[in-house]
Image (tube, rainbow, N blue to C red):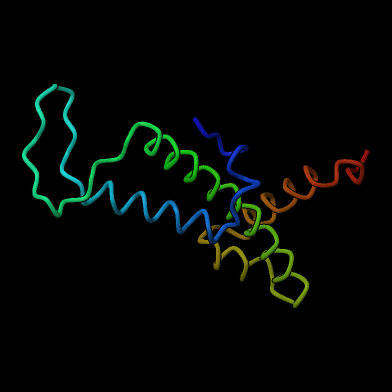
Length: 119
């Protein structure tokens, strides 16, 4: 069973999203899976349902994507600040208040650089 940590070294954000989209599309288009032993009728051109391993891979990829996107979000905040965006503008772009945007970024910075925390 792959974990997000297992998959991280194998995927960039783009390749993780591509694989996730492939699995998610197949999952959405395949006939439903039941808990019974009876197979549901399916057409020859229907995609196969996901295996247990593929379903777990899809879950792990979703978590990996969220982590990578979250990291990219904070880098985007850093860039926005560097080019002069206000915390009000950043908060609006993130769909939150300026205070929440600032607190989230400050928390991220303290996690990245714990030695710079004020005493």
